Picture 1 (tube, rainbow, N blue to C red):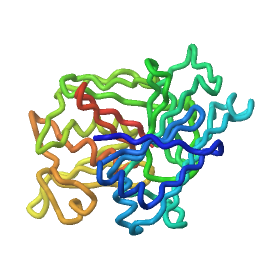
Picture 2: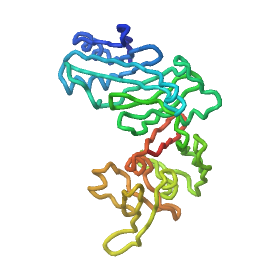
Picture 3: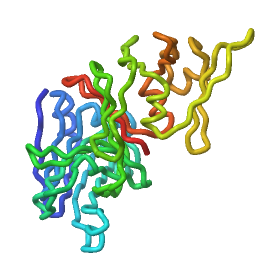
Picture 4: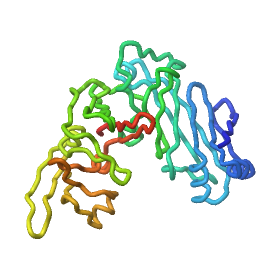
Length: 287
């Protein structure tokens, strides 16, 4: 894949004309737009999706980052990042696939010495935690989003960032706010989905778990409740309702444990789930 880097005016505004869009799409090119201390990466799939939604029209993009006030920084709200995309004069609120933002915190004079950088996250315009991660090797904080608007790079003292390796029994909180949990059954991969014991999913999310016994009409059923919302499903059960919610692998009994699809359950309750193929590790940030 080729990457095309656009220059732009000092105000951080980039206009991509129709002929440039054609040029980029013919080469399956990403767009990388750099402003002082912040970079926006628009993948080829996103560009094509925008064009498909709005026909072939000029695209305008702006990105900028603003350092918080002394009071904001003291409260852990380090930076505000604004991402704006318009096509054919129409402001895009939600993009068809994620874009990425990389922020050089050192360029804004932010000193991270002595703090747990796993507690740094991006907060979306609606107040939802998006996740993101600080890379000490590059000094960049990187996050992805499908929403445009203002984002806050924030240090959350109480954040939990739970890491689960597929070859490990341990669930580790990288943010050091909860103790290590040791599972008695390792994760299992089935049809491309990671299954883990339900009580450890509940631990990761801060949810409660209950069961009802098997009957003639329904199998053994699991109930997971969090913040007044309940998700229930039977062991081995795949209903149209569950499929509509995004569940594509049923809960199962393995070695005496109820194993449930980790991503489906976590995302149902609003958690951010990321997968690192290189380390075979799942990371969960509850919202």
